[in-house]
Image (cartoon, rainbow, N blue to C red; front, top):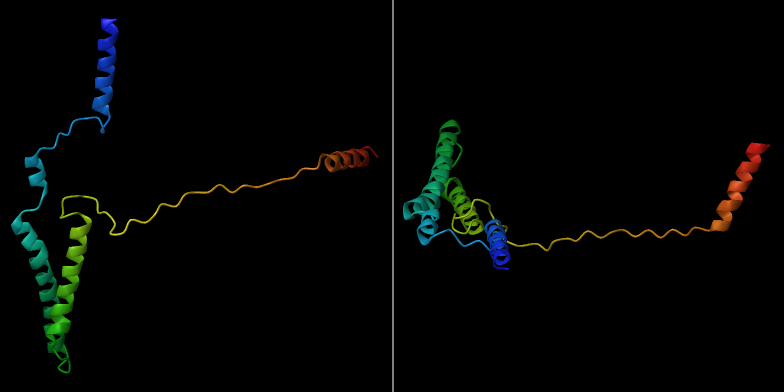
Length: 143
């Protein structure tokens, strides 16, 4: 009996290793901290990236001003709108990835899952008519 108990325990231990719900958590606090982005990285993503986008757009506006003297250079249109769009895009990605800690983005709104419904088809078969039709067809073939 003692041998059976240890054998059952070892089977459960193997099952627990394979099952992620029963397996002990292996991620320590240090590893969790390593996954998060450093302050310099966050500053780079939240301010440097939008500044690069806005600056590039402003340069395009300056080039357009040199080509076309009638073009009026507008800081709001040429710098701020692209800057704000890049900032909003960065914020959305930040929220979806929970602070850039996940590789796969989660949706902002979780939509309900649609269940597939089986289409039920009701067929009514009248046996008397089928037998009569078969008899008529066999009579026609015999003639």
